[in-house]
Image (tube, rainbow, N blue to C red; front, side, top):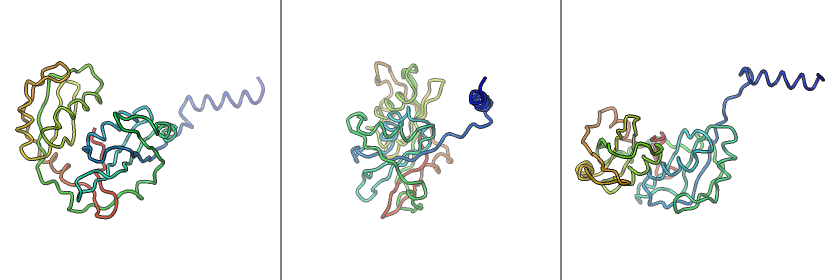
Length: 227
């Protein structure tokens, strides 16, 4: 066996053993092109599904214009994985459920984030309802999107949690949102009858959702990925 082949074999053995393995690179991208009247969580779910093939999405940061009550025109995503940026950039110009994504490389997190301020304290307590009866054979992200859309008329859906046992939790904000959600008990979603039950949110859950980083001049939004 020649010398170059021996070197190649040694490198292969090192890679197999993990001795020279490197951590997946984390990249930041920006996404534009969506309707700024969309709800924040609705946009997050759409982006999570659309960019799932690029790597592990660790954070989706959706800036908001609180004075006008809409989203800002650019959202930032942190994706971890080999060639994540290249894969994400290849999705620029593709359709995301009715709008065309414009994807660009973005600056690092410290260049984007702003300090927290009281302007984004929620005006309403977060309410939670438990949902069962949906099609559990669907992928988790598709269930989250369907439930978010189904309950969007009740208030702003801030999170949808889906458990392996076939039970989901919908977190909502707005006046009388829980009463409106409970009225959907027995309604069909995708041919399945939903069962909607009240669940009182724990104090620690409410604290997590009370505030978001914000500023009157820069980008504003909620850092943690909601899924």
